[in-house]
Length: 493
Image (cartoon, rainbow, N blue to C red):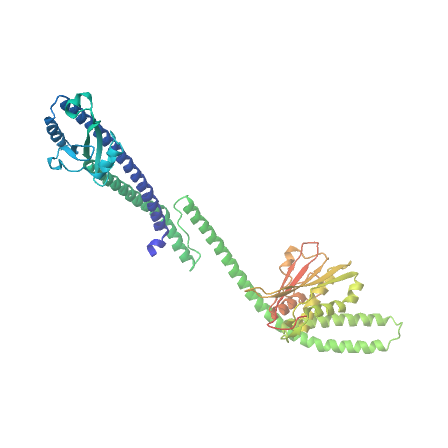
């Protein structure tokens, strides 16, 4: 079957079939036309011969030489292609014949039938006998009365049988010649087409296939482009694709190398940060305690109270940064339980309600009913939602609107169900340059902050087999979308 699977062979077989069919039909039509012309010529010849014989017989009989009629028939019977010449009576008995052995016998029933149907003076083809037969009536005229009397109208019927054997041989020879010619033309075209396709199609395509196979082992290979036709343009396009892939491969390798270096640096920084944070956390707790004690000893109107409160606020900010560092360096393992995600969103918005009011921000909840409970760590998910929402509040210093929406995508055949949490704000948005870096550790655009909030959020979502995405038309706010998969089982919310 490999022969038939080749594109070149399929084209050759298809075109040969079309050529053979077309030339065969044309040859058959031509042969039939030639057959018709030869038979028409034979018919004309039969009529001429029959008329000549008829006139000769009429002359002999009028002159009273009826005995010469048999001699005339025998002489004519030896003429080329004439099979038999006979005269038979109206009742079908052969009176005279070029073949003496037929005298006294009955004529062929088909001939008798044609006589009865008055089929005179036109050749009738007898395919089963390969003969043309023409019937001429021998009418009883005044010159015949002395021998035949006046009563009969028909003295007899002249039948001339002309053989079609020679014509059929010519047609057979013509058919053989035409079919040999058709076969030869088809064979020549098939060989020519095969050579053409091999040179201009099959070999270039095979070269492309070989190059593709080598490209699986290394992208440095190229197709040898030798023409400017479609195959040549395909080879040039494939070379351009290989060049782009090679460039992309180098970029990916370089990016991978840089990410590995960055990961090593981050691992080192994380270990160092964890150690520093652990050393700082306890002194910060002590400082906070001492300041609280000193603050209690001051009178309500003492100006030092404001200083102490500012010190406590700065210590709390440092403590938050230390907690973020510890959370990033040593992330806790999630403790999964079935959670109503709408309830989690509601708790988060209720918790931040005072801060919304303080910042002149309105909040809107669009929570889809009937969402299945999800297998989550409620504390970690709450932290992730808080990180995104706090960033949104900071992006709207002059007020705005925060919208939290939940959606559910039920599982279909062959696909998994998902729950989406969409948090959008009307802040200043995120620039295109920063959009791809906001989840990087330590990346921040604010003067204060560690740049770890969104990085920790992304890791929490990934720990739950979900994903987080962000879109932001510049100047029109940001939209964070968290996608979490369905649990294996659980009640509906």
